[in-house]
Image (cartoon, rainbow, N blue to C red):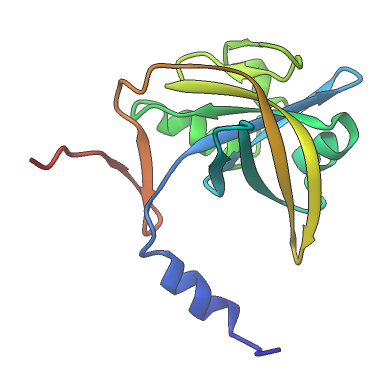
Length: 164
């Protein structure tokens, strides 16, 4: 196996622009969430998505216990929500107490104001180095594809511009 310097990969990945999501989970009354941009739709039939979460985080542990998670795709005006769930406000102990939430099928909290929500049940889990990769069936979804998404590129937030 090649020993690539992690900083070389980190620098190269800064060229990849991604949407910003918050992944949340709840188990036995404990709930938590984290900002994630490693989220992808992988199949429409069956409806499957994948998300990668850093191992040993509260959110990852709750997803492992509950076998479910929620995904909120953030809007361009939700940079503060992204920062909160990325841990950039360490003084906030309960991140979900500071935002309005709703739930769909699994009870996972979803953040009001997002462009779309997906409620997911885990069907497969893979150990992926420092991360855990979850493949999940989308059991409920809401969103129209309209609105301005929050984008992340080279360690900064961006807005989408329409090119004709």
